[in-house]
Length: 145
Image (cartoon, rainbow, N blue to C red):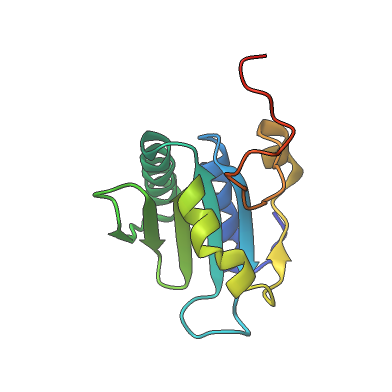
């Protein structure tokens, strides 16, 4: 990595890569430095089950502890629907997919620039476009055919 990249950004990328290594979906890094004093970066990631959400959050915690010798404050681990990992200047959000769609943090922080995740991580799991789902069947749907 380039030495011109801020330390906190490198850590945010490491968090995103740790999420991707557990097959997290729709992983993005938002640079919120100019928008809030809460944090410098938000990482958003999704899992398709509570078990996967917990596995993603656990892997992030282990990888960052091993590399950066720090552990986060953790919220939401009891239900594993939305686990928040607070590393002071970086906040990781690991959601169950439908919870992420409901809260739509990407829209709330739409002014935040996105930080690219290195291509190596994208080769592990291609990102799919984030789109809210419409649970209603179409009029042309045929059942039993």
